[in-house]
Image (cartoon, rainbow, N blue to C red):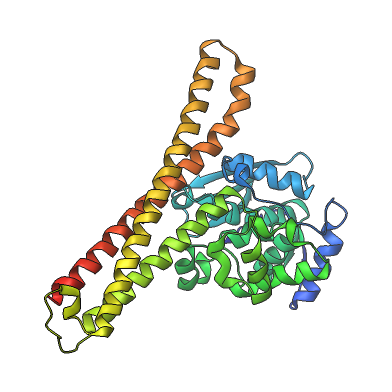
Length: 366
């Protein structure tokens, strides 16, 4: 994450090192403009289906921190190396997000949240800290303070974990994932925020970063958004794949004497029979997961086609009002369908791997 200062402007610059000092300063800077200090912005299915400018507007609306008549533009860029960048040029405020994240709305929203608080603090309030590292930490704390903590947490998922380990420049937050999650927990505890405010909006793929207390709350929650539920099924599929590959490795290294009996399975030692049964069970589970995903995909496709057909009818009738009412729904359904399509492709691969692992194990012990 990065920020470029406008050298023509005079900033209020301080040296604040401790988290508590930074938090206290955020309280004095932002509390007057914020309508809901002690709650969370809830990133639901509709939010993740929004365009980048719409996401920007949604989070600024929630924070209640519009800064005068500033012109703010959020856009994707192929040129930047870091995930996000905020800068001001000739009175125009710009947020750029790396193009490669465009198809990953959770990542986009997390990066955008961080850059938006740079815009608010530096661009709007002319406030910054002397050290770059302290300034980035202040921005992370500001995402928590303004209620955008869940949005950032959800960006620490799947492929992003690898990026987080590469360099500070590629991180979505300056704090390590576990540290940032703890900041969110501290915020929850400080203001006695109820779990129904946030639990259903946290992606299961971020679970490993959460402290045990919060992890239990999220796991027990039965009311997840559809996007979070899809993420949960994807995580389950990944665990199945990891289990299959682990068992296949054990099977490849396993040895033992044969007890020759007519039935092939009885040629295996008891340990090998147990391993073969586990591989067969994994194959069946992977197949069931894939079939279930295909059924859900067909249902999602049917809903998307129905909305598309209705929009086409309104378009033919030049009914712009009813057509526009369906645009957000269509974007959301299309987003969910694409998630499910990717999920099914992953599950199909996992099913093939499971089948191959089981067949190979039996062939090796014929």
